[in-house]
Amino acid sequence: MSQFLPSVIITGTGAYAPANVVTNDDMAKIVDTSDDWIRSRSGISERRFAGDGESTSDMAVAAAAQAIDAAGIDRSEIDLVIVATMTPDMPFPSTACIVQSKLGLGNITAFDLQAACSGFIYALNTGSNMLRSGAYKKALIIGADKMSSVLDFEDRTTCVLFGDGASAVILEASDSAGVGILDSITGSDGSNPELLYQPAGGSSLPASTESVTARQHYIKMNGKEIFKLAVRVMGQVSCDILERNDYNTAQVDLVIPHQANMRIIDSLAKRIHLPLEKFHNNLDRFGNTSGASIGLALDEAFRAGRIRTGDLVLLVAFGAGLTWGSTLIKWQ
Ligand code: ACO
Image (cartoon, rainbow, N blue to C red; front, side, top):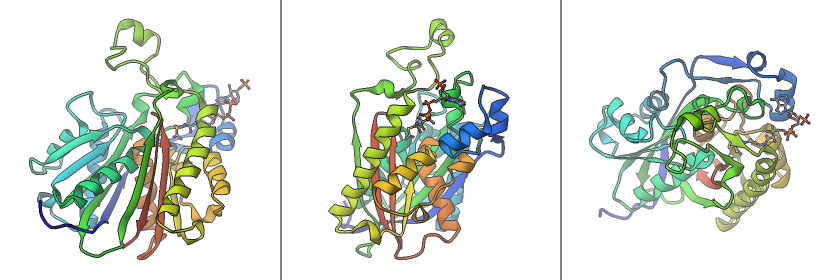
């Protein structure tokens, strides 16, 4: 082990969304829905769907290349890749290994992490602690999901809510104290997976003619229950991380919540007593991109000048599992 390193900072961000824009009116040509319903119930106006042959790793590589450029590092310096995804290119090998090869990285540690919509926060937490241990120096953290590959385009209650995309950050160890990723909280409750799941395609229900006919390879969701839990748990985990780091909500400069539904974000804002102006949202243009969502908003907020040195940034997510998490960053 090398010397103890007190801080882990984000030195570059990147994002990628496929070129193919699908509006609510386009969705209304596929299922019985309307622009008005989707906007009023979710806040989503359009989403991007990957093109033919465009996989999760392709999107991940595009976002990662941008983050590497922004950090100004050489690819050979990266010694860890984590890809947070629930829609890997294939069950195995991991998408992280495919990314390692496509980016021409060294023969480094590469693995996928599955925490659904909380994946980006889980990966930030895992990656930053691996750097803090001193065993790794520069990590590439990616959140990427091709949700269109698991959407049931005959189920209007789910297919209108999601989109495809990828996002990435470079994490580096730093000698400066009290900056960068200050803390993360992650949690789970697997007692009721049916709240949000893809029933088939895994070891409990391998692919079969029957499972395909029954449309069991697509997302199933109890939207109402997920909505209530998302607001409650994201509110709690936001307050918990601030409290344990001796901050109050008024000191937060920007919140980047998982981009699932504008009504969830509205309710969260009320619950933690922060005005919506302190939130950065882009789900109106991208929908819910699952593991990519927080990084996609983080990259956009940073490039738009909404995050400056010294800002206190709170990331908060909730997703299938159930999983949840929050990360507190003092931007350097
Ligand atoms: N277009 C038109 N009508 C629709 C659509 C649609 N796309 N989808 C559902 N409806 C209908 C329903 O059939 C129902 O009709 P009925 O009253 O005749 O039965 C009516 O609209 C109302 O349906 P509800 O389910 O009550 O609508 P609700 O206001 O609860 O909104 C929604 C549904 C948007 C799914 C909401 O519950 C939600 O956002 N839940 C959170 C889900 C989520 O964001 N999951 C993402 C993953 S987890 C995470 O990322 C946090």
